[in-house]
Length: 174
Ligand SMILES: Nc1ncnc2c1ncn2[C@@H]1O[C@H](COP(=O)(O)OP(=O)(O)OP(=O)(O)O)[C@@H](O)[C@H]1O
Ligand SMILES: O=C(O)C1=C[C@@H](O)[C@@H](O)[C@H](O)C1
Ligand SMILES: [Mg+2]
Image (cartoon, rainbow, N blue to C red):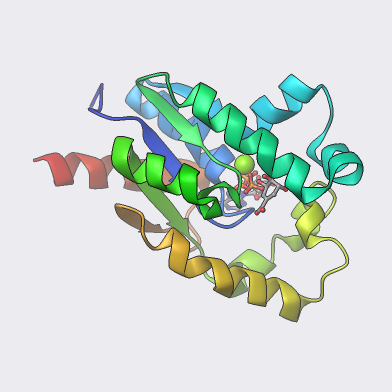
């Protein structure tokens, strides 16, 4: 498979694998990979952790909205969003209208094994109990489920998940 008709946007909870799988998918489909969190850090020349500390979550969300609009003007890209970006209504509406939105859905129990990998760089996971993380996970699921495609990641590796997405898109087009 080469080109898709619309940009592909990957959404889902933090740590679901959007960035990791997005890079693999971009290789398989021959499309450029763009990561919104990475772009925010590059533009601000600060880590997300520092942006949250100095500007609060609202400052981060403002940067997220503004860069999303700028970067989504490109075509033929695999666009990995940060875990909370799709919760912003204007980002959600633009994605659902203009792109193929794919929700990487991971069970909470499998996700929770990744917490030690995630906590250092994800301000919203810091100082949270497992129960509070589960509440956040559950509260976001309804929004993520508006995606055009839902991919259960289970215990697949990132390359296996990317293959599963590529096959699903291929079948959907056939
Ligand atoms: N399928 C997988 N199996 C095991 N570990 C994974 C898998 N996918 C990602 N990981 C690991 O989980 C961590 C988070 O992955 P990644 O950064 O891709 O998540 P993300 O969905 O982009 O998160 P965020 O919403 O914060 O941007 C990384 O350390 C990555 O190596
Ligand atoms: O789920 C979220 O709200 C976030 C996820 C990360 O990708 C970053 O965008 C940031 O840490 C916030
Ligand atoms: Mg990411």
